[in-house]
Image 1: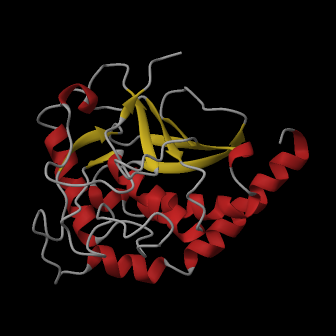
Image 2: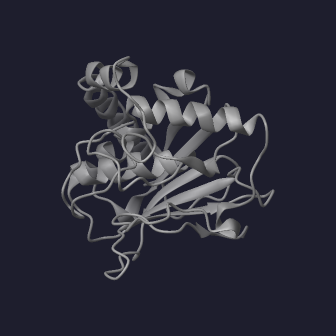
Image 3: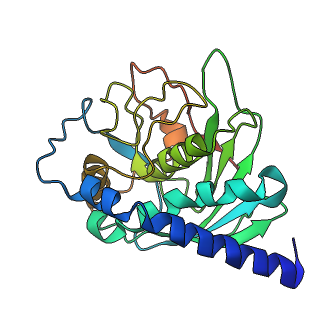
Length: 247
């Protein structure tokens, strides 16, 4: 994937993603700006206090080339633009920028790698996993990876899963008691069935805003050290985060 041809391929994929995103812009704006939506935690909104990128971080996103088909990549990248589009509204200032394909995970500051790995566990029923590292041993991310089980192949479900995991990197917890389509952090019906959530809802934007307001008061410890999770839930596409050490 190196050289001019690889660079050209990445530019073509980026152009395709931008055109694909424009088809969903009006719907996303409606989801994130509707004044009539009520956000009750546990019903339409999730809690917060999870892993979080630093305010105004420009997150460089990489895709492990060997792990995904070329036609899958635009579906992986769609949620990046959807979350970036609301970065000002959430006050996080966090943007996600695709930097192309790589051979393996990148361990640089503000780097996020999308990759595949065997993470599906029938007993715990999850097919994606956030792996995180904090140089400060707190909730502020230094770099991370979103690992997707090879069994997750439906392209729309891939989009949904990435949108969900990006929510985790902005401080959001799971909410499997929330109503469908009220939050990107809600429960999936099944591994390869789309939940039709390609980006944050109005309530997700509100909760990320609250999460970043909390950060101005205090920065919490590493979620992996505190066992942070949504009590009383049965995760279906996610599980307790895995902390990866600096190489």
